[in-house]
Image (cartoon, rainbow, N blue to C red; front, side, top):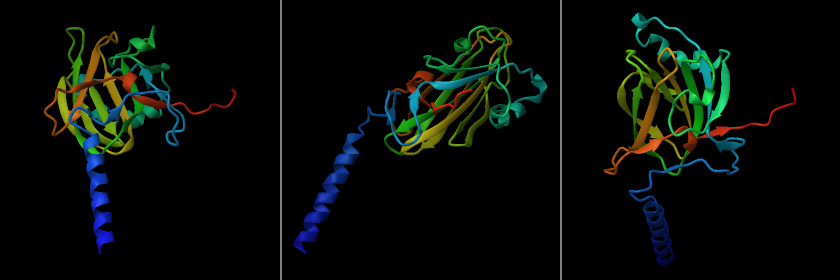
Length: 208
C-alpha cells in the first residue's frame, strides 16, 4: 500500500512539473528553426506562398473565398516561393501580376489549447473589398470568408497543426494582412504570427 501511495505522489509531482513548464508567458507555439523530426518529413522555416491572378465579382460577396483554398490548391500558380517575411503580403512574389496569395505551413505546438487569432487586413489603397481572406486549420474552415478585422477561437493540437490561408489584395497586389494570437484564457498581449515563424515541409524532389 505504501508503495502505491509513493507511486501516486511521484506521478502527481511529474504532472505538476509538466504543467508549470508552460507558464503564462509561453504561448506554446515554437518559431521555425532548422530541426529534423519524423513528421513533417523535412520541416524548414517559412510558409509556402502561391500567387494567383484572379478577378472576382464584388457582388458575389465572400462565396468564392469559402471554396478558395481547395480550388486554388488544384490550380496552377503564377509563382511559388517560400515566404519568410514578417507580414502577410505579396512582396515575396516579386514582379508578378498576382492579387491573391495562398500560404500553407505548419505550427508546432507544445500543448493543446484554445487560441484566439485576430486577423486584420489593410488594402493600402482606397479600394475596399467586402471579403478579403479565408483561413483553415487542420483542414477545418475557421474563417470561411472575412474582411477588415475579425477574431476566431481555434483548438490547436500538440505537435503539428496545418495552416492554410488565402487573401485577396487590391487590384495592384498591394496591401497587408496581419495576424496576432494568444491563448484564449491569457491576459497577456497578443503576439504577432508571421510567415517567418511557421514551417513548411520541404520534401525531397526527384530530378526533372
